Amino acid sequence: MLFTIAIISTAFLGLTTASPVSSNNRRYVAGTCGIHVTQYQKNENGVGGDYQYDIQIKDGVGAIIGGANHLPIPDLQSATVDSELPFGLVVTSGAFDSDPVGFAYAGYIFSSSNGCSAGDYDNGARQMDCGFGC
Image (cartoon, rainbow, N blue to C red; front, side, top):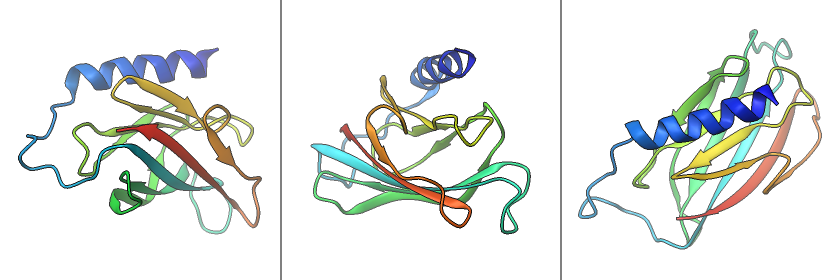
């Protein structure tokens, strides 16, 4: 429940503080955008006490338009990942391996357990793919 509240709060806070990129400067194809995420387990294979994430943001034709590499996010905290999209992608980390990873984009809320295809941890990391309207 606390995790859900953190995701919802972050999503709404992100909407009030995010400033959209001018439509003249956007370089992406609208439609169904996607993200590919690798989540690295904390305290495994040289990863510190926070989960780390590799994130690729893809536009409507699958072109990579933003992302982050080895982004550390503390338990139950969020980070915004920038791209060519008009708003940032908010990523919220859980506290335990079994917790879902939360995502929010322009009011659309989804997670590794709802709206994404996520695999199990293998050698200290798990992969997930998600889609959202952009």
